[in-house]
Length: 108
Length: 113
Image 1 (tube, chains in turn orange, yellow):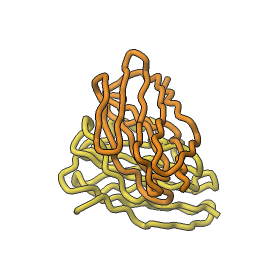
Image 2: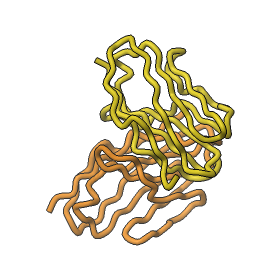
Image 3: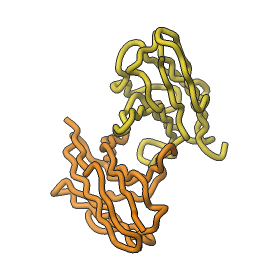
């Protein structure tokens, strides 16, 4: 079966660092994606990991451990505009399987 | 086009009516995907196309749902005899192929009353 777990909601303060975890159990694995989705808008691509380790892109970093079925998205120097849902997705051969998403609220 | 275009952006329909949702992918993208997002839920896979073929229809909830793609471009998702539980945002995405990330459209918000 396919199972992708993320916390439902998180809160953080402007300027802080937040880590959003994702664990997965899927019948196949060909990479893990993180998407950002603001309310009422389309998801937009943030990061992609296919090998173990950390990928850094500006304020955002994503980590993958395939042996543990675990990933996290790290957001640094949080800004109010980072308030959004963050979706973890695993590529299973030919399509992405999404978790339910983590709704992040950033407070001043 | 520059992005993935979906129409209509909003659709309100009466229970029992048929609806058609349209997706126009990015030019040159061979793979096209349909997902459904209900309030507070994650993205639920419906169907994907590689060219005009649909290798995986496993996510279609019932035989009231169907989709087609013509000319390797535009796709239409049809829901027959709509039910209230069909109310959701229907998202389309496209990519260069099944090994690439997706670009999503803005979605069609379907409300069945």
